[in-house]
Length: 545
Image 1 (cartoon, rainbow, N blue to C red):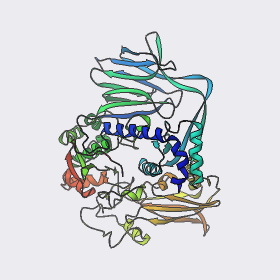
Image 2 (image 1 turned 90 degrees about the vertical axis):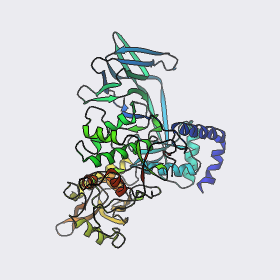
Image 3 (image 1 turned 30 degrees about the vertical axis):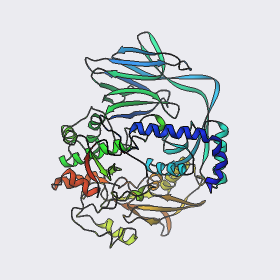
Image 4 (image 1 turned 180 degrees about the vertical axis):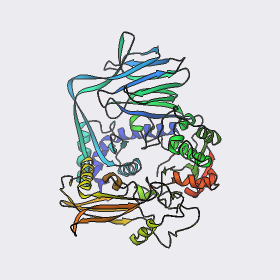
């Protein structure tokens, strides 16, 4: 057992671990994420709107006030010691640039990488498994989602290597130490008047709580409510964080997620789900000291520059309403198009199923019996995919799709994926065979085996979409393409839907709303057993699995 193998290592840092756990739970209590009596009043979210500022030395941010207003800058100048006092300046525009700071001595930065995953949900399940073994971890997103040994616990080269050695003795693969030698580090600088300031932290406020942000000279200018921070992240560069009230935040989410002209009930359902999702997921970027991102890895958030009257009405009419199960916020997952059937949580990610996230035939009237004809049988799936009427999403572009891919392109797809995850078969020459070997009741791929000239690659669940370009969901089957009679030349991906398939179908909600369903009925359709509640102090935001 790995637990026993690690005991000799873990007891050395027992006191340190205990103190860190106390701090960890104290922080969660403060944030209201675990304690059932947390009080939810006005909620300010911390959204990373530019996540990796300084990753490139050419990075530039142009931040301006709105007409008749000014920016108030509060910052601490960079001196390497953190001893400078906080200063304040007022201006109407500030240009943030990156200045490389040479180090007097090379600096080594190391991380113990315990796992590499395509999604936060599966990374979190992996993190929980490591915690069960007594190892403190953190979830990060340097590109894909990763699980790291917690840096402030395993904070010396010796502790990192003792941990790695203990894990390797337990025959656990795919764990490694990532080492970087730094000759310089990026620093944020800006100029006001004749003075240039190098800073490690910058807070930007305005009287009107409105501020404009543009990335680079030719980027899109976006208007944000609330205030901004530039702050260091876990990867050696910086994040521009928007601190914004959740109801204002939703004005920059709802029209972009559901569409500015969605049916009213669909917009209201989306609003309740988006509010619930944001509150439940405030833990995602704890390692970077903010809560949410502004991309499809969280929810698309574009600020206040493209709000819509319909979305604003939906936000106002549902103010404070969230979706719950057993007095806890639901895992409020949603996606574009189901392809005719939604899926269980575990069809897409590792982790325990949620009672309210189960396969639902996405049609207003029963047209398929999953109990009698489960889609884990290939013949049933092919028959289901051939159906093109009666479903909520019929007529949508990605309700059904058929995409051929040459063997040469499939080889290229898989090589890039395997190199990215450091797979031992990344140097293969060609794919010899691809086969779906396990499906869920909803037809989603659980396991696909790809035979290469070097050996078998096993792809599980949503990793299939990460590995190959054609599938935009995991609801598909494969047909081989041959040339010259029997020479494999590629595969045809035949399927339906767009996205992970768990929870609410956005285009499905359009159809239900047009049929007269209310927001409550739409949510009852896609999240059976869940119920709408006003946000209050008794609701648990998240308490883990």
